[in-house]
Image (cartoon, rainbow, N blue to C red; front, top):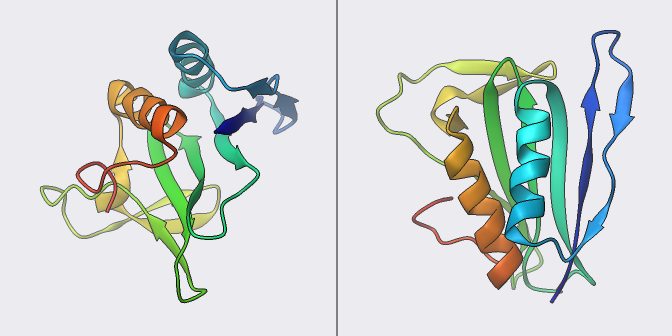
Amino acid sequence: MNMEFGGYINDVGAQRNQLPVIFNPDDLAIEKTVAAVCGEAGVVSMRCRPAPEIGPYELTLYVENGQFLLMLSENEEDGEHNVRTPIDNNVVADFVIIFGEKYPAKAITRDIEFVCMTFKEFAHTGNVSEGLLR
């Protein structure tokens, strides 16, 4: 399975600084890229190339104010589109704003190790277990 990994960081002036695109990243490249965006605001994504007709095709991380939102996009057999996120049932049912959009606070994490583990699993298998993203 071929993977394409990259993204951008927003600097203080809200200007985008493109990260290098990495094809079939190893674990170290994943850790370095995620670490580069974690203290900033930005977006990192990993895409299957080519995208499968059915199943997961992209894992995206949105980072702002130390908050991480992971979203796994997948195509379902019936032609519908589904997005899976982490769910923390210990968090109060509230909303968090990331890049001007509201997201359930239950879907937000601050755990960089969890984020790296999720990207590594997607890179190795082309999927993320439902124990991590629901």
